[in-house]
Image 1 (cartoon, rainbow, N blue to C red):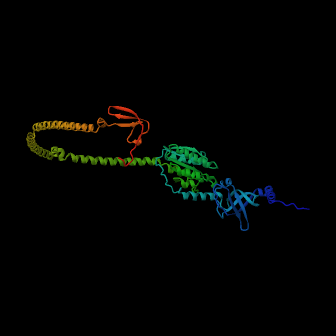
Image 2 (cartoon, rainbow, N blue to C red; image 1 turned 90 degrees about the vertical axis):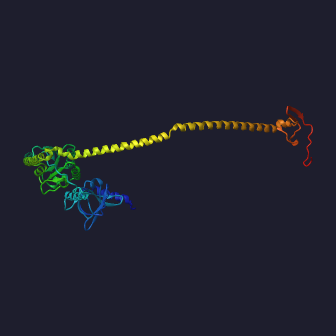
Image 3 (cartoon, helix red, strand yellow; image 1 turned 120 degrees about the vertical axis):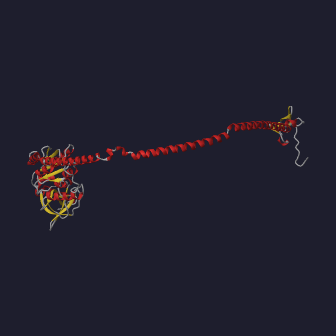
Length: 447
């Protein structure tokens, strides 16, 4: 009988099927220590769980990992819930984790400690705290409308400072949707005209108070431009909202007392300051009155002309000095005027004009003589040039019996240039057509 051999893929597929249909492996509760963990941001997480004897590979998909309220670390002991299955490609089995929390310390306490550490490193707890206004006009209260918190705040504010206006923003203070509702009402209060904001709720477990430990709530409180008083839980409870807020109150009543002063005490303080101000004003008035009486008895008011005696003497002295200086200046200017008049008379321009006219007449006569002489000279030169030109004229030479010959409009200078055809002989008074019958050239060297 021949054995049938399976492929590796077929075997792994068969074993995977066994894992998948096994009801005991569909929901496994496991405890162990995290090993080979390396954070992969925005991705699936691959690591191992081990104890002192064994190890199993683990995978946590991105969606399940983002729901964790703590950060897994190497060596941390955890409780996990998931299913065990075989990865067909490698033939290795592993646990697919759906939920994980720290073992021993609760997940919420672990997440709270990690968030505190993160925000503390960012400096969110050490930001400058905004001072509370001493006399607030409008106070926003973010809490549950049905709890004891709002009743305690209303009672305290009406007793201490009834002129302040309280505005309640009904808010969920417990549950998964509470953090988003708290942030929404903080943002809404910021758009309105409030002087102070109180955020609070009564006591409870860490699960009940958890919305006030959410990062979004902490950042909304830190970013708010309105001073915020946090009153969450009992005096022993400390939430992240308490650490980020500008002021922490142990109870809602304490928060209301921090938010408003006592009106009767403020009125009494105002009256005391008013009395002190009136006394100080009367004292100043008495001092001013005594000073006025002293000044009234001064010689300045009894003999006011003494104020300007020195100035009057100074004015007379300066007036005399001015008159003397003006007299000296006028005499000096008169002497300068006489000197300028004499110089002007000596430098009368009429004589200079007459001399210039005579000089101009003389120059005009010389110019005319020179022009006439120049014209005569040029005429003589022109006549000489005409005579010289006439002597050099070829017509003059031809008039003595000389001629020149052309053939096809070319001047013949040598018998070598003649051709046996018709030619033209030019005389001074006309031309003659002639024919070449014979050409006798004289050899070189013959005369």
